Amino acid sequence: MAGVLWMRLAILVFVATAALHPQRSLAADEDPLQDFCVKDTTQKLHVNGFPCKDPAQVQASDFASDSLKKPGNTSNALGVAVTPANVLTFGGLNTQGVSAARIDFAPHGLNPPHVHPRAPEILFLAKGTLLVGFVTSTPDNKLFAQTIQAGELFIFPRGLVHFQLNVGYGAALAFSAFNSQNPGTSQVAKVLFASTPPIDDAVLEKALQLNAADVQRLRSLISKT
Ligand SMILES: *[C@@H]1O[C@H](CO)[C@@H](O)[C@H](O)[C@H]1NC(C)=O
Image (tube, rainbow, N blue to C red):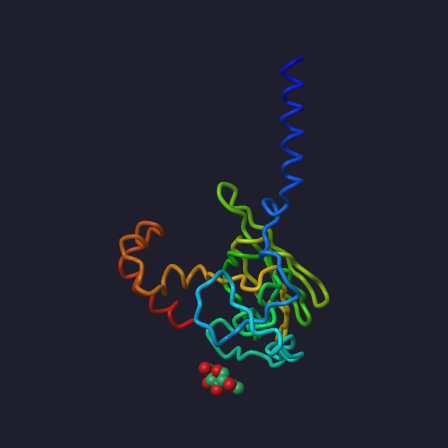
């Protein structure tokens, strides 16, 4: 009986602690400590985020951006153009914990397997048909993939490898939102085969069970994407 009581108490303490410290379980950017902190591009400080522009100098235009207005150029090997509107291009987002992107797809275009280390992604498909999917982490490595149509949403959980392939007849257009001002992107193929400096051949050969010629070939192909 005492054992059961102790277990109940332990569960109660755990639940209460989790409720008092929501930041520990919810992963998103830090909360702002003032109304806004428009990015000051003149300072060269290294802080987590960016220093704030003098509030007296802030204008309405600091909170507007036209970076997603124009289609990206999809004339490339993958047939895709990802245009971000994050804190690097849109200073008003600094400390607000949100950002956006537009993704233009040529027919058969692919946004290749990649990860956003700092945010989940919610994608809204404005035009076309996409095959979208993500793979869970080890040990399951389970693929969740599905075809979505214009007007539909798909959520890619934070930090998981995911992709989008245009499987419709014409071009496709999607918009994504992130709960981070700077979600970051690691493209799997580029991380492995197009890093600076390059990862040692021995690492890639062993990890992917390739020979030296395969590694050279992949380096050359992937550096062009
Ligand atoms: C798109 O990119 C291709 C390849 O880099 C280039 O040749 C072409 O001029 C670009 N088109 C536009 C409209 O910028």
